[in-house]
Amino acid sequence: MGFTGMEAQKDEDLVTDLTGIHHVGSYARIDNLINFENNSASQLLLVGQRRITIDDVHDSDNGPLRVSISAIETPLFDKKNQMIKAYSNEIVAALREIVKMNPLFKEHMQYYSQRIDIHNPYILADFAASVTTGDGEELQSVLEELDCESRLKKALELLTKEMELSRKVQGRIICLVGPPGVGKTSIGKSIARSLNREFYRFSVGGLSDVAEIKGHRRTRGYQGDPASALLELLDPSQNTSFVDHYLDVPVDLSRVLFVCTANVTDTIPGPLLDRMELIRLSGYDGPEKVAIANQYLVPKALEKSGLKEGSEHVPPTLSLTEGSIEDLVKRYCREAGVRNLEQHIEKIFRKVALEVVENLANTSHEDQHNFTISPDKLHKYVGQPRFTSYVYLLLMY
Image (cartoon, rainbow, N blue to C red):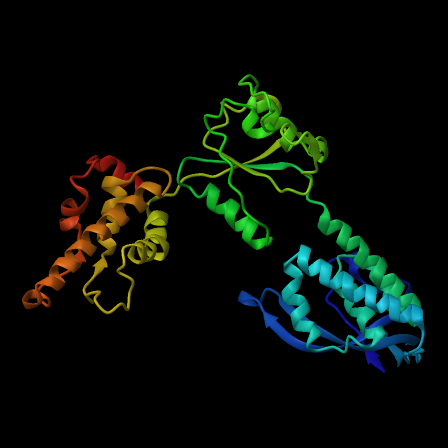
């Protein structure tokens, strides 16, 4: 006897007869149970053990639907079958190719490759199908297939579709719009790093020569519209045969993922703007700037100034207090981004580094100097405050 149950959220989720479920399923073991906050829901991690099929239904007036099940025996396969060997080799090669194109699969592959026998073609086919994004009917078809060669073939078809999907990067060009210093370029670098792609930054701000984009001819000229050249470069329907003027050969740029950044959209021509998906980035408020400074800007500035924590000659009293950072945000750096705040923090630690070196030269006073930067010492390092309006300070906090 086997028991299968679920909590029905809607009336259409209720299963009243066998027509509501598949005839072949998987007998699974509960590997982990995760309860969410306030016990609002739970998440189960199930590990499939073997295929099962429903033999009979037992009447149950008030309880859950009860059925008789039996395990499906996996038929033996011919180890000398050349088609099975060929399909298995193709699946392994396809899995390696997918990992190269989509790094998100890498961790998944490493986890399961240590726990399954990939030399078993049945298990290999099941694993290959499980890592794809095939729909329920396609995956169920692999689950129900008992013939080894046919199961491998169906799994390979799903992998092939996954590879074609991974190769396609065409779509809307992303354009990040926001004030200077809010992290637009950093987002572009993070996208490249997460996709395991090479990052190349090309600035077109103030560009007047179209040849910088299209390439120089052997007889050079300075006429042209860079925006029109960008239109051809970024349009997925045109950049498959982008022609470089110097080489005079078509170049396929359809697999390049373009991420544009802009401070404002007023200067972007309409036809070019129409081909972009705008994502507007707002600036940071006071508490956000303080948090960014504590977690990222201060450690980075310390390292760049040679004052990395734990170094031999770095005094233990060296610190930039929370109040000092808040004063920097309120009275010196009210911009939407954090670039100016970063410059002020780096300026402070450069001057502190000089003081540390001078203090080391005078060993008799080495332990008497206090390197804690409090709000009343800021004027010594970054000058007088640029802003003194207390109305703005009240609005920020």
